[in-house]
Image 1 (cartoon, rainbow, N blue to C red):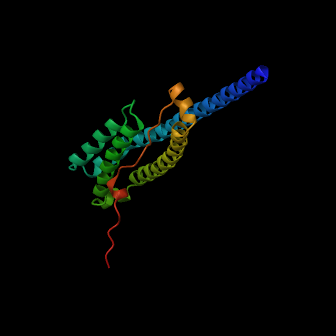
Image 2 (cartoon, rainbow, N blue to C red; image 1 turned 30 degrees about the vertical axis):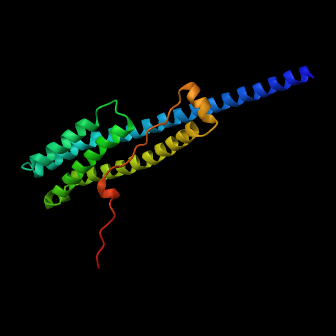
Image 3 (spheres, one colour; image 1 turned 45 degrees about the horizontal axis):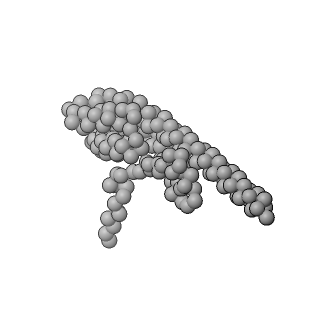
Length: 187
């Protein structure tokens, strides 16, 4: 009888250990997927940052006296391009850059020759394409973060996560008030 009881305990312990190993490996896989998807966003953000100086130079040729707007874009780009930011910090910096770019494009509306310039149109198109790729990357990254956070926070995998130091990941969110505001519709 005791041998049967010891055998049952060993079998239960083996099942628990195997389950913990499977959960640990799943969390490692998710953590790596989150990191990989963040690196993809980083590549697109770098592409965006590389396009901006060319765009500023093109606008500067047509709107040289609009110094304040151009300097705001350059400053925002410089801050956003600094390495080592967390996803939340990077999102905040990118939102400031997006607002500065919005002012730059609004400025371009005042200069018909600039709006017709092929280089400006090409850069604007490339930037729009890059923004779309960043948005797609952000959705993929946030989906991976959600999967990781769910795994880390749900019982019983939270026991394994706590034991091996897995923590919640940070989302990459848009904080642009223009995107978040409800449109004003009047008839």
